[in-house]
Image 1 (tube, helix red, strand yellow):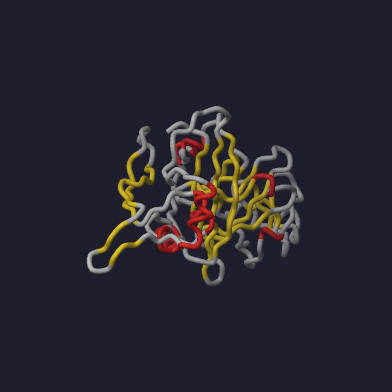
Image 2 (tube, rainbow, N blue to C red):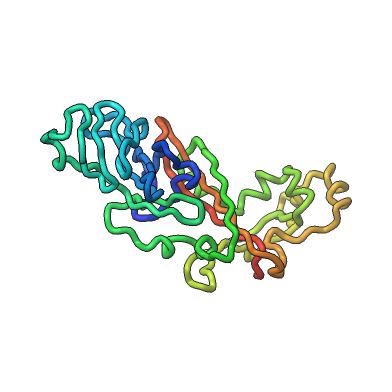
Length: 274
């Protein structure tokens, strides 16, 4: 399973789609993105030309609002209709009889968003975390490519493993109060639009019957931690809104085997009162 179809996905930073077509791979689909050089609007269609399977992303934009295959010049408009075959002249009988699959696209907040479903797309703003849609927020973005399937990645981004796997990590030792164990859960946000991850219980030190105590902090680093003084727990304290809030949109492209691309995103907010 490469992902859920009926959702909007961040495809590529908008600035990367210029005068030349761009190839992306999402949910196993090879997709070409290109701009109408007159309106500057971005469009998306299946990358494989139906004639001889050449990559349309290697093609050319000879006419505004069209994309031409690099092999025989099959030329498609922004709706995927075959409007010309350049190697056969203006009277080619194939014109109007072939249509390439297209994908709904929106350019929003510096990203090209693409609807990967088969039906009519929902409004983009309804599908996004409110932090991204809010124009009062400054949006920053990062993209990472992981050679892994998206499901194990998302299922293992939990808070339980940190006291064991990252017990020796310098940022955790210096900047966070220690947690020997913790219980976490997901709760619905106040606006009813999503879930948030919270810690509901935990201890800095603990004792296991028949085994003894477990502190999990390297003794040699206790003195270094003390030099920096106490730090708040990972849950943090209330932060007053003194500046324009920022939102970090982290996009992970997971690739397996031949590079089938699955995408998941995390939206991290900074500077909001809690």
